[in-house]
View 1 (cartoon, rainbow, N blue to C red):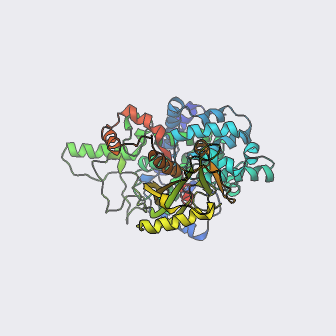
View 2 (cartoon, helix red, strand yellow; view 1 turned 180 degrees about the vertical axis):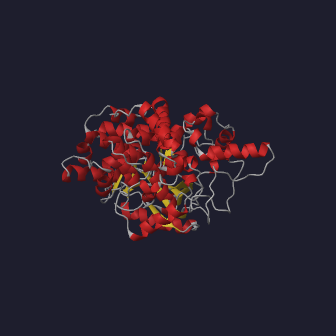
View 3 (cartoon, rainbow, N blue to C red; view 1 turned 90 degrees about the vertical axis):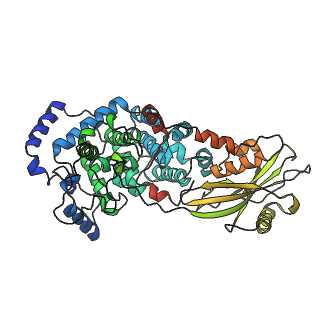
Length: 526
């Protein structure tokens, strides 16, 4: 899969020649050299011109030699330190371009907002069940939701299935070959995912920007402005496109993400292990601050700091957020001001027939095909006010239950407690009720959209993590079961120690991969 790279000797020669001319090229080798993926509109051109006019060369790469040094150092490190992950093994051993692109596509979608360690098992099961686009295209949404259960952001699985059907039915099973066409054709595929597929599967020199790459670039070029702003985002994408190695674009993009995942981490970066530390502006700033402090000298601006001739640099942190000596390189990137999730409350009931003929059964109903947790199965529930009276909850919930199974005894509806589950944009509090029908009753007939399942079937059904939490509470209230001790859980958490550098690398498997496509997932929820 890997393409041969140019000889290092030739590149070194170009680097020496370029270094002698760096004064001339310092301002010329800027983000303006990067061609946009699509024609820009008038306002976009104006924003780009404004950015270029307001950016100091301090935040750019000086010349070709500096870019080449970054590429070689990063790729050399990646070849030695990259993690052994199932999607990488599958892609490296696959010669069929459509199968390779499909394998990358599935992994990138699963990794959105989800921990690597969690994705490994889901990815393995998915590829065993649907190894090709054609296999996935013939699957049902129920099967997809069932396998995806617990992974979160369920619209991702639906997008994968819809995209596979489009490729099979409209393109003869052949994946689009460029980042531009991938983004245009495949549902749920944004700029990041399209660039990742195009570079890894097809070798297109397309730069990518995800959460890890944002962190790396902001530190390497000391970008302290809000990375979520349009102007800064444009600059980051321009830098990514400028840096991507045309000889090994897929490996380079994975290396940049890998560096952010296991070395240039959010809280405790391992700077001494970083292959590009000599090119890192954030690291240089830390060293200067330490030297000034040891010599009791006030900080001073020199040629290695941003000093725009007029006005405030649009890539620097605002004056209201000065350098924090205690944070070091983690002064970059600037922390985003996240909007807190809205709070909602739901009354929900586990309705069980423990003595039903053929074994105990619990009732599940299916959610609508759009919106939150679309198409998944859950216990009957009703939305209620944030602090409703228990009487109101009971009345509303009993009415909902009776709409599915007919008349029920109100006196047996027991309030068991509450479960809190946070989705991407909603903090949901479930007021959990239980109702057991103790008579020797047959499994009653229910209308479409509802079904009775055994407890074993429930655990393999297409249900969300929130429903599994609710069911655990219900099981904990049943005779003969052990309730978990909150006190012991708190004690366990309090005993956790700060991880060593070696443990930090191990913890990198548990960090979620955050692509810049992520905002499009806000309507999906877990």
